[in-house]
Image (cartoon, rainbow, N blue to C red; front, side):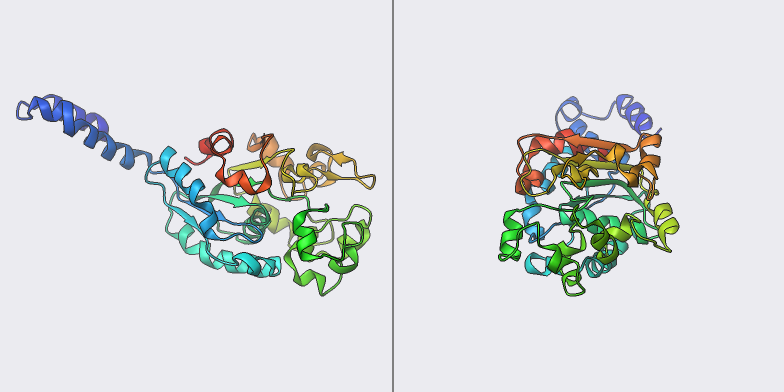
Length: 306
């Protein structure tokens, strides 16, 4: 009605010069009306391992080019080396920074959470009962865990390879390092389940008294978008970005055949049944370029940020 009223009033006015209506006035009014009517939800970005807020300039630009006026916040916490802090500590820190943004967004917010940040966001969504996240976009995140000899692993643990890192990760000391909180060795499942202070709890792979409440909280999201690709080179297996993972023969079992999906332990099967689980696979993208790739943004993210 607001748009219709303005159009009728201006078309019926004999006082407006023709060059105004055809030149400056209509574009100005169009921009104002568009901004007032569309009202894009704020977007909150959570970075990954060894990243900082400054790494997401291109993604911020893509969002504002496609959805002008969007309030985009890249949370500037646990940057670089501090991203090795334990995952639950990061969840609480990011949660404290994000919550005021949620409270000021009556229509809700969107999450874009990259790499390790995707697991941080799952922790937030599971434990925050009054969140108002609409789209949770998980951008190349090891949602089912990590098990691979990557450059990150060589940098952090130069004396270890994937086959023996469990000696470190599945100890009390190892669980003080973020990557060990989601290190998922398929050859030592019992150690993982009993030692992982983070991922095994999120996935309800061991008894968790909060599992029912966490599932209820997580299912408040409207869309879950899982983005990944075969040329990632860091997330191993790359299908972990879409909840696939290795069996004990290191054969990838896709999400739909994983126990956590079949038992719907935290809501994946429910989201799929609702039509709110979206998988977006893009070849040819290396891990460090997901948030700077315009094709990835337009193909996998843009439509879920309204």
